[in-house]
Length: 210
Image (cartoon, rainbow, N blue to C red; front, top):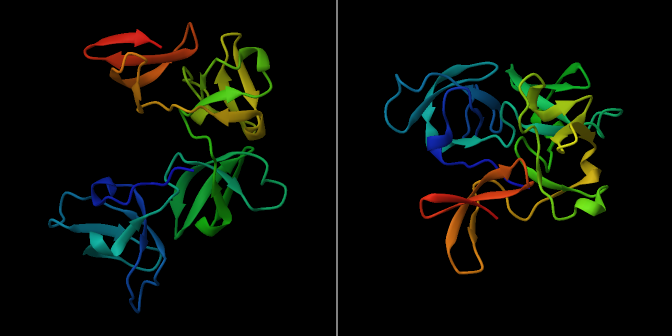
C-alpha cells in the first residue's frame, strides 16, 4: 500500500497534514489543512486546524496518508466493504463520499484502498484476459473518481464495468514506473494502450507498446 510522501515540497495549499509537535492549543496528531503558501517564509506553512490557525515550521508537520481524492474503506459498520472517496477536510476530520452518503470521520477510522485512481490492475474474474491490464477510472469524464455505488470502474473495451476490490489485483507495473525491456533498454511506463490493453512505454524519445 503506497504511502503519501512526507517531503515538504508536497505540502501545497489544500494538503492535509498532521501536527507533530507539542502545544497547549493544538494536540500532537491533530489534522489540519495547508493554506496559502505564498506568504510564508522558506521552511514554513500556514495551516488551519480545528481550534487554531497560523504559521509553523514544515518540519513539525507530516503529510496525512489520506488526501482529497484518496480512495478509502471505512470502519463504520455497513460501509466497510464499499469504496469511498475523501472529498473534504472539516474541523479536524475528513468527509468521505461513499454510496451517495457523506460521512464525517477521523482519519483513524479510514483504511487506504489498495486501488487508487489510475491504478493499473488485472481482473481476477477474467482469467481469459490474464495478460491484459486495465486502468481505474481511465477515460471517465462524467463519473467522479472511478467510483460508482462503492465499486471501482474499469474500461474493459466492452464498455465500462464495475468491480469490488476483491475482484482485482494490482498489476506488477504501475503508471510512472521505470521498466527494463528484454534488450536491456530502460523505459518509462506512460499508461495503458487503450486498444491492446498493454502498457505504452517510452524508450529514448519514442513510444512503444509493450
